[in-house]
Image 1 (cartoon, rainbow, N blue to C red):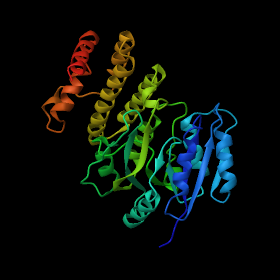
Image 2: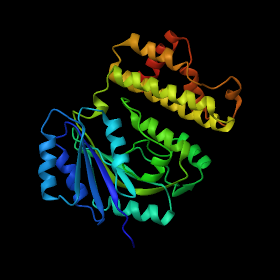
Image 3: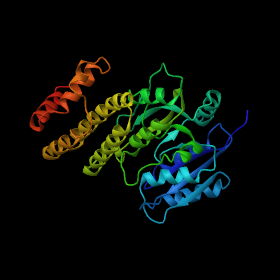
Image 4: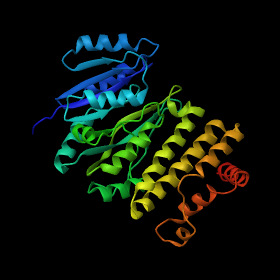
Length: 332
């Protein structure tokens, strides 16, 4: 079989302790035609020296692009899209790793199904508890999907992970449709995946864990601040704009996605900042401005009972909404 070039793009920012493991997992791939694109985003540790040392040992495999100033992960990812030389692009975070057959199996699948994107499963490595388990599982009845309407429906139903990592993507498709990450936005994967789903023509699924996501003290999931949740509000504003431009059936699917995202936002904020009750209430009030189910939607079988309950709990008077959410969360 032919071996089209695959660019593996890795952000480099304060990951001195982990970046060698990440790069080596790519160097150890069974697939023969890979370039590693390291995008240095001007961190404050010794990461740049580490990657330059590795590059000196594999100059034919590794390119380094240095940003002049810190730009943030969104721009690092965009640099990967713009500078990839491969037909396909794969995002790998600098503190994670991939299994040796990851790229080979994704290329085989994307070629066989003639898809634009191939998705693998992700396993978490919990460094605190020394455990491993699958996260973001996708619907195991899925093999591949064709046609944007079907893809968008499945996406809004949460059938696969919104993570940009562990996806093999056809670079020209994303350049053609200008599907880029939004600057200065945390949780950029969520919005990028939404914008992708609005345009994507084909996608396929590898039912195997090919990516290890490491949970440690420096993981973003454990270090969320107000800035993260302000960004969640920005994402909802993007959803709202798309909702206003959508046709009636797409609006129905978007409502499912918006309800789910609002629930995740409120839950994560509670876990990270539950002592700041005033800020939780402020965000609850702001999220109420987003599209939500109408009175008639509660009589429709299109939405599940769980979605109807969550929508109701998300749109109550603020003080009542807070008390009910606190009760729902603490009784689990």
